[in-house]
Amino acid sequence: MINRRILTSGLLASLATGLGSCGGGLDLGSKAPISKDDSWKNSLGDNDTSDGIEIRKRRTTPATVAELMEPGPLKEMTLGQPSAKVTVIEYFSLTCPVCHKFHKETWPIFKRQYIDTGKVYFIARDFPIGRSSGNAAIAIRCDEGNYFKLLNLYLAQQRRWVSQDVRLDAIHSIAAPHGLTRSKFDSCLANQDIIKGIKETKQRGRDLGVIGTPTFFINGKQLRGAMTLARLSAEIDPLLA
Image (cartoon, rainbow, N blue to C red):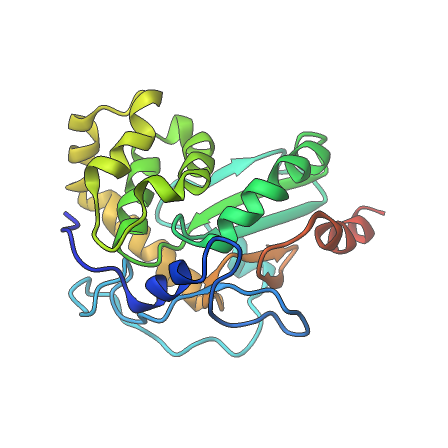
């Protein structure tokens, strides 16, 4: 079970800059900020290695499409048709201000124009940065039938539940109106299969070259930062032609 602790310094730095920007690495040739994962130890943001996952060196070569599409430890959360010409994978952290910006400003139009029309197959993968994000990631995994609804709600309502201390009541309050009872939430917080699965998903993301959020892979090409619709279209449209 994830206890109440202070968030990582990387997350605090992100919050201090406000929801419009956050510190971290930059996409090559762009000015798009990302929430950088500086823990490099415990997969849910600890300062120790008690999760038992070996931390390997950061990847220096691009991941192959086959590697990216290899099934992970948890059920893949997807939208759209697997037969679509383009597959977009997003690694996100629910406490990431740039993820908030993307899902508020770009996601609704992107989903309507590309996913709902069958042009794009979309895969969402957890990459929690800090303990609050880890607990919220467990909450959305606890109710997979509402996964994408809850994902967007946690991102949209970050000010309600993200703080210096992990506030389980506030985290639960986001999902409670949509059917997640407190008893089920508490049970999921103690569910080692979910916890281990999220940790392994994040570690696998690191192995694929993810160093922060949001990170996107479009038919295998890695992009970082808050994607605008124009930038996504510039990458996707030639692949559809």
